[in-house]
Length: 195
Length: 236
Image: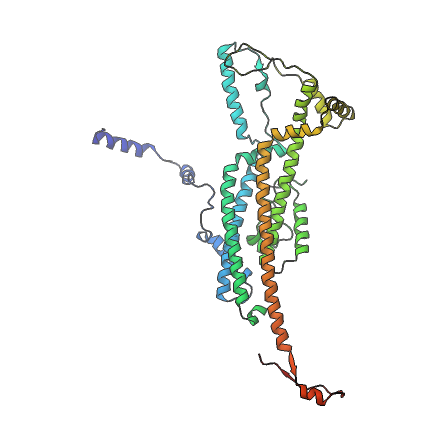
């Protein structure tokens, strides 16, 4: 068991040596846990919250009663949340697609395997031994066209599945919100409906 | 195909004030944003959304249709891209080309050792010409395939096997998009039914208000005359 003196020293050393020092480092560290920010409620963001209000007014129409406005704001909230997810997914794919030096994960795996193979060959034979065809045929250029998109989708499968879950939830919320609005409008007295 | 930036420009048919509710069009790099606009216009023109909720759905249908088109195009393109490699494999067997194999290396995979850059094999040269639609190469490939009683289906099957993982993933994305589009269409049906019912009720109310009961005695006494009968509005 460590002595209290040793524990104190370890703690003091840890405090002195860990954590980012520069403002840039601190900013980067603050973003460590952030992945896509899609779990944050829309209304927590003041800008989006304002968008929800404006959109709700547009959905409810002129001179809508508070009940309708409330239901419309549920639709607007779900719709803006849905757009947030779709935009995040679009950005994720577009960012990789626009990267001219994009190198798929599968290529890294092949390169790693080939490096191990070369090391084994050098150990067993001569360093100037012929290169196996398998290594010569390994992909060396960044993929283009449909292959690139296919590799991007493969690499992003995990993130895309997570985003799909958020999209599904937002779609479900929007569907029920619209149904509630339709039901409320159908229950309104006729003159209000005609207005 | 027009080359687009990371975030596509808003479609011409979307007013800037409504961008927060509809978002930018989901056009990726290499896709034609004009074709997207055309699709949006044609669907909006055909459906004629009656309110903002229907506009949202209309946009959803267009976006999902665009996505489905994208995945279908991608699947076809992957098949096309994989076809030459698959054909090379088939032709290698047909041209009875024996690959150089080394042996006596326990623990190492079966490797083909070639010094320096490997020159293209005869079947690779042939497939390269075939891919550029060279008539002589096409004829030679067809003859080779016919000699073994094979069809191009075998090449496509090999291409499918080579790209199976990618195609399966893309197919799943297309299935999700199709399911969502169908769900939106069902919701439009339901919404329009509600809207139609509300409209029917309103029209009935209006008609009821306009409807008048004609006093039968007045009609009898005035029979044969040109006078208009005395009418009373209904008491609802």
